[in-house]
Image (cartoon, rainbow, N blue to C red; front, side):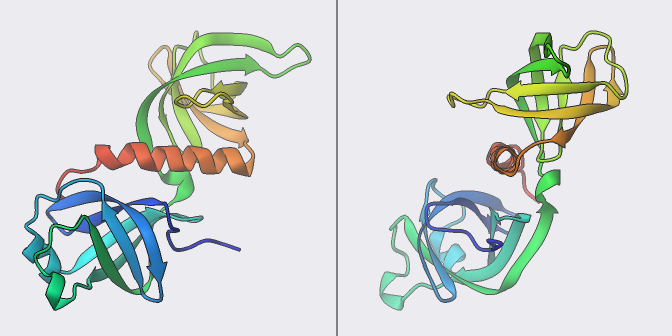
Length: 209
């Protein structure tokens, strides 16, 4: 079953239109609302937050989605500095970007191998420069060629197990960079990459809309 709404424990962005994005975590949910713990202090004054139309942005099984709503604040709590707020949403999620197109600039170590019986290592010193659920830009290649097929192992953070898959070179960028389109990647790996791209792109797109 496709998951369209954020779940308890998910990190999301509270979007103050044309002003800022505030990182938050879903602490609880119910019919028509999410309780959000603000993980950073908003620059927007709390009274203005409580009066204005807001949005949340989050990742679901389709990609990056948005929902509109307002803070549902009882009169007795207005002006409170409590980091937990209740976001009352309306309507259905609006898909902003499909998960295969969620992209972030990164610097991640990458090992490439050329498919074959011996799985020859092409380079252990490559790096992913940007990535999405559908492909990545890789650097550190020697004479990349369009159509080359590579297996890859991508190391993500402190995780012991790399993300493994295969891809084809579909774009050349200078002498040692190439765009790799995934041809084999299991669903778990694709979801991990999409979540990583979303989480890393949050800070990269915090500029005012």
